[in-house]
Image (cartoon, rainbow, N blue to C red; front, side):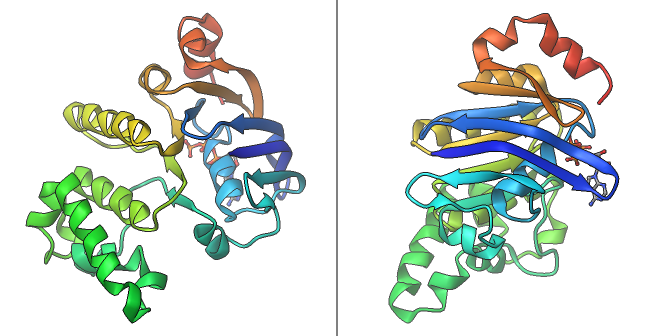
Length: 240
Ligand code: ATP
């Protein structure tokens, strides 16, 4: 579904990723775990086209090598990226944010009814968003904004969902709900790459995992195997 080969990223003198390779199968949840600054967000940005790697390549099944394809075109290839920090358009209503998630389709009169059906599906999945549909997104709680950011991403009908620390800043109950949602989306067949600092929870929901440390993959394998290994805990607890 998604293959990264030997990707390196440099921000000026900072080496954020060093020869990172991974392969995520269709319908699987993969997780990239590691300490602050290990390069996790950078990896997702390389996948969605927000950051260009200095070396290496990214391939999407059915589309070949996409390393040079800009971010707005990758959305059309089925990649949706929920950035860290639940980013939504704060001064726009919940409803408008959802429509913006499918703007290309909404502009076409023929497809508008489909988009509205999809918005209703998001209100069914996240009833609180339906209740708040006319509210400005900035007035939502952190947990609700995370739901909205995820719902906006789902509006593009992605085949791969990139989630950057969806649990960040959420109360424990909402963290549980977030991981429950990931499990549900997996059951529905969506391919997900999840970046998390909550390594144990991420490994419980994932099929495969990669541990990043200072920009390099230092461990990888089936998530349930990594869950039991000390090296993961060390990478998680240790410095970036
Ligand atoms: P966090 O959980 O804090 O977001 P992370 O594992 O996602 O950490 P990245 O955000 O990918 O890590 O950052 C990797 C390294 O690259 C860090 O040293 C960071 O300071 C640096 N970095 C990230 N973005 C930039 C940038 N735009 N310019 C310069 N350095 C950057």
